[in-house]
Length: 279
Picture 1 (cartoon, rainbow, N blue to C red):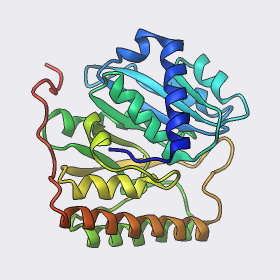
Picture 2: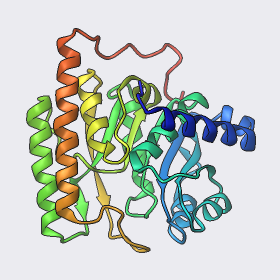
Picture 3: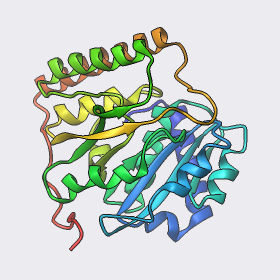
């Protein structure tokens, strides 16, 4: 379920048409797993990230989808050269909007499972299998990595404190213990992204996580690693500004989902009979 302004709907529709026209059956007949990456001005970083992604995970073939969020450098060229299917959006709207579009491309293209990672190379692609395994085993619908259960190279005390504060906050609001609410390496059944309401243009991590939990989907964490960024610089900007905006999304999403539940919306739908793991 997605709500968006008319301008966003027009942009998405045009981008999807261009994507399917460019790639044809490669876009409409995706393999079971789609790795979705939102990228904005990641020339020099995005190529190695894509090349490091596995061609298959847990015995399932992988498609690599990059949504270029209004990039004005060589992001598109680098991503295509590395073997990704690239959806080139001419307008910079934010990571949340780019991921939402990427989810739709993956779902409508036939992928059963979606994995997200970042374009800056901070996450370890070898850990994707660890995140996807509980879903294929029927034990979870959504799996997120956790630096607090695993490891991180950052020594930024403000950011480390923020991770802990938001973990405590979202755990208290949802009733499910979460140790890391902003980790970018995640795996999920594709249908999850179509069932939850996604409308945040930028700080979507909290919106997606809260929505998934409150819809009754099974959420688990797995230890994972976050490395220091090697190329370029973070798009998150000032820690205080990021924290305030993220807090606003957490509060707003929780209130919205609480109202939805009060109105008696249904919870997690049953899995489709054909949604199975590898034989």
